[in-house]
Image (cartoon, rainbow, N blue to C red; front, top):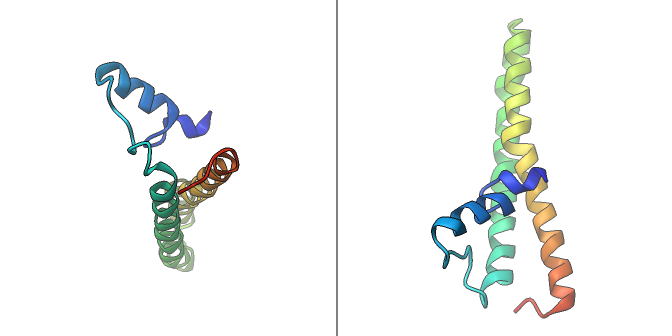
Length: 104
């Protein structure tokens, strides 16, 4: 359920399809290969951002702004770690789909 509210998640897609019945995230033939590529790129970008977000957290701790460091850490986890894990989950779903039919 937590994955349903993200971009192109189940609930979001259902909402958009109610207003635009022909809406599809990917063309049916290109779905698995394109989605795999996009999920890898997205995961890498979020992991880089997660790493870059550590410096401001460390600096905030260094100057004694512990509350601010906590907020920065929570935001970094919510905006970068969670989406990176979501991409891994997406690839797992695609792998299960690929076992039922070829990915290409």
